[in-house]
Image (cartoon, rainbow, N blue to C red; front, side, top):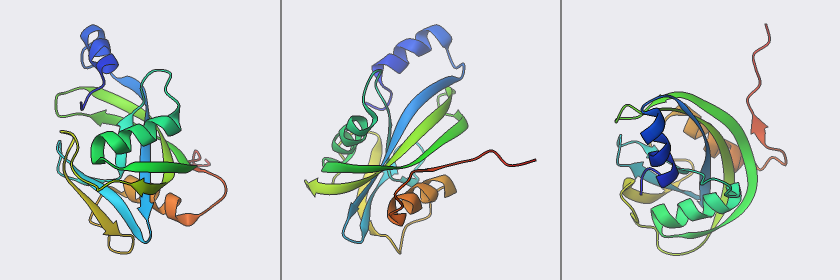
Length: 159
């Protein structure tokens, strides 16, 4: 289901007004490949992303999203970045900003395939030959590949 039921219920009350939502990105790695989905809403390639359910642990949400979107089971290894995505206007007019928690993940089992209506294609891509995608998504993949012990986060620019 593309829009979680709790968001549908919120939208009944607030219409298209901006919402602040918690989200996850799962950068799923298998050897020298990363699992990407081609989104059905705008046709772009992306790591696995999704909105957390109320009270859901972020790592649990990342694993749930991977299974729901691609049919693969993953191990969530570590938090690699934290950032805010603001000013998103969805095709239906809904406005939102997202607090994204990006995790480096390891593929455990399952054949990757389109498992829901959020994507039109699912593929393993060599990490050195990724398709074009938004810079913020490439930053999330780079953070997962970096192997740094601490999570990355954006800092406010100094004046």
